[in-house]
Length: 116
Length: 111
Image (tube, rainbow over all chains, first blue to last red; front, top):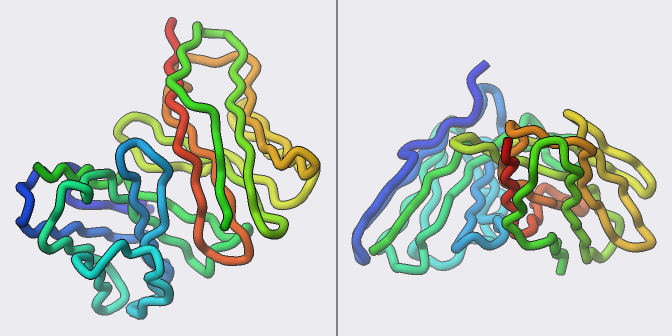
């Protein structure tokens, strides 16, 4: 069974440009999460989808970030326009049911974003 | 709010040495606790977890015990190998789906 995949693995863009990150969850997983690790600090929650619906986007830093999950399969995270402070590693995770102690979140390898 | 504090790295060890990574947490309630590991070029993997006080999680020779009295979940391994070189993250969940992570500890094991 394929794990969570993310594309691209790395992205280098200039300030003001747009970048779109993609996440393909494990097949059959209704729950999809985005997290971000900035400047080697702690990994922070961005948002949670249940199928195609945004369940919680309380961690999204501002309106330059837009996440979608059309059809409840893969998800995209667009940053427009990118700023220097957006640099970091963006992780995607998925789980079959609602996560909690009993549901393991399976993570992808992350996308390393560098904004110059 | 909920938070996790783990020892800063990097940590460099020789093979067969004993490894301890300290982790303490702050939470309004009784969280479930996790250790995730990220090997080079790979995604985060769940290493072990504990869901209630005094539980011990274990996997691949690693152990951690949920200590409510000290709000800690320290990770230990008695004899590390080069293949244990990775970034280790302590994390918690409290009543929902949001994992709260520590800053990560980079461990390098030298042959």
